[in-house]
Length: 157
Image (cartoon, one colour):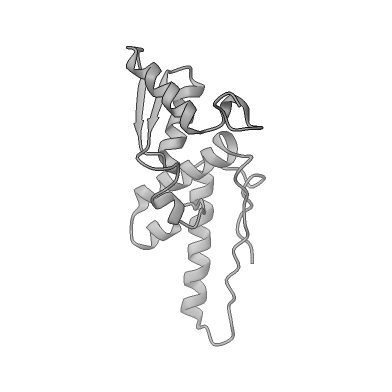
């Protein structure tokens, strides 16, 4: 064995590779981007920077996605939960980030999952209108972020 994980070649994350790359960093090489934290955001930033040809270093105290990313639902949402609290700006930002993930950064890792809200007979008209308004707001966010219905279908009844 040559210091890499058997069957995974030089791309495997392991102790030997980590040691070799840390040694190379200490040899005075110029680093364009230093990313601290290997959660979903940090890894995304590092991937983007490296794909642009920047010498990128990602530093993580434990393992990739060890912290909050690991505990999350792994859902990429468009910001409706922020809208419900009045956070229009953050809702829009979330919809834009979802668009980027769905169309360029990770279309191979993301896919739309339908959301079903049952409107049972005991749900009043006001609740029904609120649910419909929420889905309409989601459609507005999707369109404003530039995500086509072919990528993320619009809501329907």
